[in-house]
Length: 271
Image 1 (cartoon, one colour):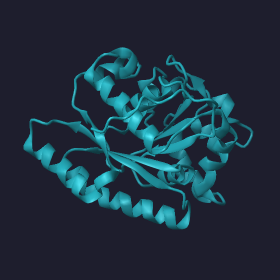
Image 2: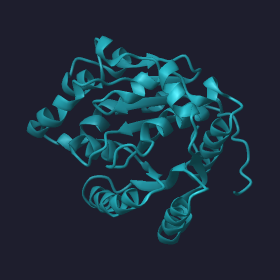
Image 3: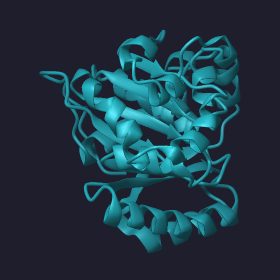
Image 4: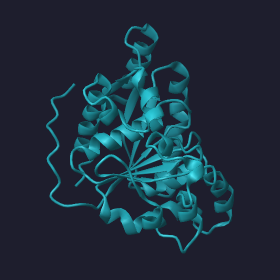
């Protein structure tokens, strides 16, 4: 682990670095990472917006918002021209952390956007007015490589790939990097992989260590030095609707996400 400096407080707000949390395989820790990385970056004094871009609404639930109670969600922002981001964004209980929530309505956007002109740029268009208001915007993508995920990649300038340390997750990485390459060529040449994050790591098993070694061999410096280990704390944080950094601030899991925040900010300085 390199000796990363503590991030200095920002002297001004914005323009935001937009980072997509992307992996088409489900259950690899995307939502957990989005919530806890966002909270850890917010602790440094930066303004963070977390976009729930998954129709399951898991990131919203993880921050204490009930998706079925929402009057407005990211779906309304995408599909209705008269809705602004400010009407949909909600403050969370974490200082400096805001949420753009989602619910099952978002699944309809995948079908409806097909009819739209420049459909891949819809999310980028609605985010443009709020880019100056934040230092970091994190997008929690759905576990697919469909039109919603392409929208997220087109709107972003960076990608973090959470990767469960097991063989099937490793196989899906080739498909994901192929999609990222197509988006870079055709839609968003500024898109870069910020890093690949090993999640759910259990150092006691040979399999987990071997998978992590193979990822490092293939991607070298793109792999984060921080590794997120398995812990019983993460399911508990979902139940209480808050990040690990406030639920168990002195736990090793909270420390891992603070270390990850330092690495992310060092690779794409924000604020």
